[in-house]
Length: 286
Image (cartoon, rainbow, N blue to C red; front, top):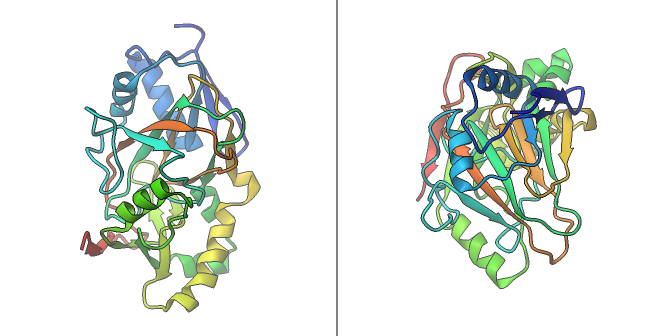
């Protein structure tokens, strides 16, 4: 292994890991530093990794049990834990927390570049813990008591193609609704963060029209430029973000060019609010 280093890419979010070869098993001493940086920086970037699906699965598996099958999205043949994030299927150009419409959103998600467009297609990641920290005390007191209903029917951008409509129809075929605390406590760091994103449709006890302004105000603190990182993909790149304290967005600015990333997610736990109460299912796959 070459010289190992972890360098911040921004003051509030993101770090690049240098000198770690993800095609081999990382020594425990290196792994512990990567895990610590993962919790601190919310998203880690790795350049020049000549790895395949098996290597990606092994790396993601160091963080916890892998998600076996996404409830709606197609997977790679022979590897149900690998999802091809293909721009011809759908484009996730909205801020979201992976599968937050289920009771246990992903712990984290790894993405690996497979086919890249000649321009565009960056990935944005936002620090939801920093967003919470930025809230004025008066607004934080309100957020601390709120719960939000997350559903896969809240926001699903249209691609405008026949294939895209087929994928969208499959994504919406079953309805999932889960109530999560707007402020969740990180199970490892104890850090509070805002659990929102595009799947957060309304606030518990409020109508949609009453919910939107409050959700939008809170979400705006997460998405402040200083709380976000932007990654421009190159061949061999891998990233992993902490889905428990971050949101992400795939920028749809690569026209009709092909863009494919392989996604492997780590199984998460049930979010818990500041009051110790856990998320609960309202509707699941009906």
